[in-house]
Image (cartoon, rainbow, N blue to C red; front, side, top):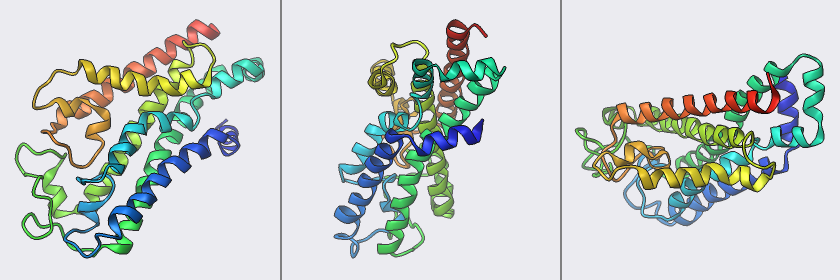
Length: 265
């Protein structure tokens, strides 16, 4: 089943559209921001797309993350439902296998879209910026304190910056996977229209932001904000990981309810 979904992913037009969008932003950031300013203070760890920067391109990248991650694969159930292909799997007794594999594969595909663009950007930054250790005074980001920090694990940021960078690539992968999972789950409840499915995590994310209480920990509950390596507010690990596991659990729970409602498993 996994191999079947992989082949369909490679034939999915929206998957390539999403890859094009995020990688275009990633490469443009290197061309417009990194290369012209390569001789100024900074290194890949403090200047990559996920770090603190004055450029508007990272803002656009993370703003679009709920949308582009959902483009990868989240409309497949809707397609299979409309074409009747899903009935074939059900007739073979593969209902549970189909839905479990679809949820996992869709999560991975959505995460891959965002993580791949970040990896491309990191590679570009290492090509044009000196690989120097992060130092708070010399070339570090003065906005990253060790106490009440605006990044997760700030001591790791200074002691092992590459590991910290890769951790945030992984975090972005997970968050993008969650957005893609929300889109897939919404396809069980919404009319079978691709644009509604793709827009659902984007809309829900920014509706959620409106209800997040205004406090010094506000960024710890906003997925498109704590996905970035450096935020403008305090980032509390307990709130970040609680938000991730809670939303992922609720999404999967609603996914199961939607399956029972639509397919009578």
